[in-house]
Length: 492
Image (cartoon, rainbow, N blue to C red; front, top):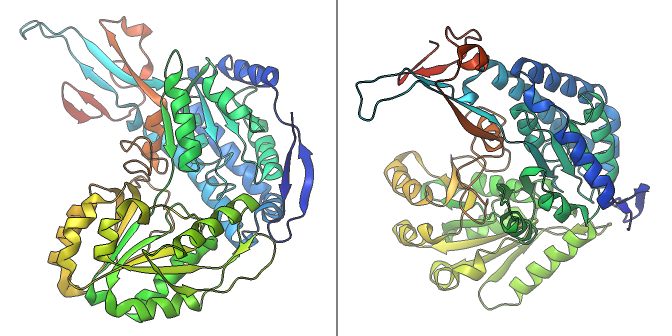
């Protein structure tokens, strides 16, 4: 098997030593160890303490981890330091989720012989699904990678985790994994490397669910593998998203244009929430063009992404569907690219919606011009699924915002008003998901406290002996967690 080698996106030169790909036998041993680890039988309190140990250990190694990650991603030490802190905060958030307890959805129904049919005593709770495979993302080497949201939420749920490292930052992944594994009981966490390890992990009979962040093509292939197993398993994939933005006339200002360019080019456009599709008044094109023209690109994460971006924008520019309105500066170093802005009219867009809503991962955007915002109400519901949808409006346009928001609600998981979509807060109320192709399952989120729900399955105990019940379901609520008792939510 070939080894996995990291490269410096600023120079294209190799970084660190190549990491051997994981063999089938090694993967089998890692998964078997996870399945036998006993993690699913641990209490919420034990898991909460373990997550906090992982967070503390990562914080203690912050300088080393950030330096390694910067050499493999060129994302900059400032951005990476913030991302690592976000990652450890996320681990601590799930520790608080465990201690609060409502994630278990504990439900108790007393027996009632007078109902039709008679009701026995029923006590329902969510339990860990089993070993989870996690595919690390390229563009967030910490927050959506080895110790990212999928890993944190699965470990919190009581599911052991096996991470498939992303080849764009193998050394960062290996060092992060070493720290995580050392902070947890033996076997609870493992990591595998190499192209062949991905499909093998999805198809392994002891893996019971998979989390994925990456391209639509790669995610769809693995999704099909998960569903093609003799025992199909849940596959939660975050894939492609163009994140539509509507700018109404009252917000068509130079300030809005500058905000758009900043969001479009943030991190060289390598954000899943990048505003790649914008609807704006024709009168705003000059301001948007000036803002993007004044922006600068930078190195993308790897050569494949650079070539994919260049190929995509060149193909778009060569079509007769759009006009190239602006090109930012290309530093011309390593895997660098220049920002691009294209324009088209609403009529042309509506007739070619499939082609013009394709994601071009990187700092490229398409602006669709309109004359009357009412025209948008017919087009917006036809957009493909996205993680976010944004509306910028003036103070006297709220009535129209409500109608546009209703149209966008069907195509996006998060609706944003007078702000930009790049950046995803780690919080109880966050929804980071959307209809296909944004995700493979719009019912769930990969960020925020309810991300834990993906790795939990319900079980009901009927007429079960009290002393054999989990403490979360025992009489008197010994752990004091929120429960629904005979239909009433409280702490009874």
